[in-house]
Figure 1: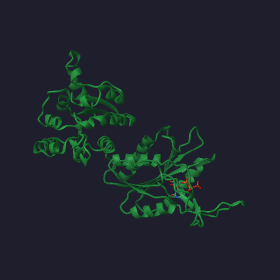
Figure 2: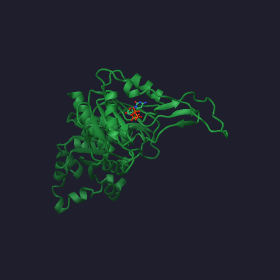
Figure 3: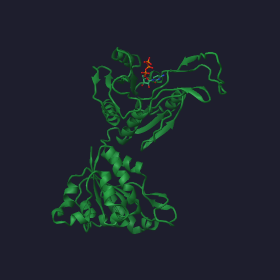
Figure 4: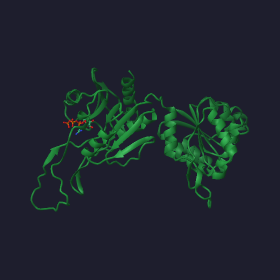
Length: 395
Ligand code: CTP
C-alpha cells in the first residue's frame, strides 16, 4: 500500500521497532528502515531487516562508495516517514537541519509527511531545548505521537513522561496520515460480532461470528477520519485505534446501545450477526439436567437494522445466505429493510466468512444491479464498502 521510511533512533524503545515493522508489513506496507548508529546499539540490524523484509540502511552503508546518494533515494521513494524511538538528539539534529548522519540527511531531503514517536528520559523530554526543537518540527507540519507517561526503559528510572506511544497508537496515526480523510466530519455507528441469548446464567444461544468484518470497517472508517462508535458483541479482538467501543452481549443490549448512540450519526454499518431469537423466559438459576427431552421456547428478537429506519441515516446491512435463491432473498431483504446497501456472503462457498481474514461478497445497492466482488482481505472489503458509503454521504 504505502512506502514508509522508518527511522529508528537511539533510545531503549528501539527494541520495539521490529514488532512495529512486522505490523506495517502485515498491513500491506513496504517499510524501508534507516537505523542510527546508536539505535544499532539497542537493536540488531538483523532483527530490523528480518521484520522489514529488506536491508537496513545505516551510516555504514551510506559511507560506502555505492551509497553516496542513499539519503536522497530513501527520501524520494517515501510516502510517509515515521521516526520511532526518536531521541532528543535526533529531534535536535532534525530541527537544526543537520545532515551529519544518514537519518538526519534523509529527513532533510524529505518531502513526505513525518510522524515522530519520541522516547527519552523525563528530564530530557521536559528540557526547554527539546521542547523548542519540537516546536520547530511542528511548525514544519511534522506530526507528533506521544510520548506518554509510564515506566521508562532504563533500570532504576522512576516512571514518568517520556515513554514511547504504544504500537497500536502509532499504527493508528500512520493509517490516519495515509488515509484519504474522506469520512472526516461524519459519525459512523458500526456493529460487530455475535450476540448471546442466555437460556440461564451460564448457557446461551449464539453463532460463530468473529467480529473481524465489523472491526475492519471500524478501523478503516476511523483511519479515514470518521468518528466511529463500535458496538460489539463478545469477540476476542482489541479495540481498533481511535475508535470508541461499547461492549454488549444480547440483541436487546445491542439495540439499546445503538439507540443511545444514534443521535448525530450519519450511517449505521450493521455487521453484527444478531441472533434472531432469544429465550422466552431465561432461567434465573442454572438449569439442572434431566432425562426428559428439553423444549425451549424462543421468541423473536427485534430486527434492529429494520427498526432504525430514520430519515437521513445511511444503512448498510450484511446478509448471509445458504439457499440457492440467496440473491433474490438478499434483494428482498434490501427492499424490506429499505437499506442503502446490503453485502451478501455465502458460508457454503469454498470457505466460511466466519472467522477468516478474507471475504467474498456480492454488493446490492438500492437502485443498482448487484456487483460480485472478488475474494479480498476483510480490510480491503471494508475500504471498498466505505468508498460507497463516502460517495453516498458526500453526494
Ligand atoms: N439484523 C438485525 N437484527 C436482527 C437480525 C438481523 O439488525 N434481529 C441485521 C444484521 O445485522 C444484518 C441484516 O440485519 O446486517 C441481515 O441479517 P440476516 O440475519 O441475514 O437477515 P434477517 O432479516 O434476519 O433474515 P433471515 O434470518 O430470515 O435470513
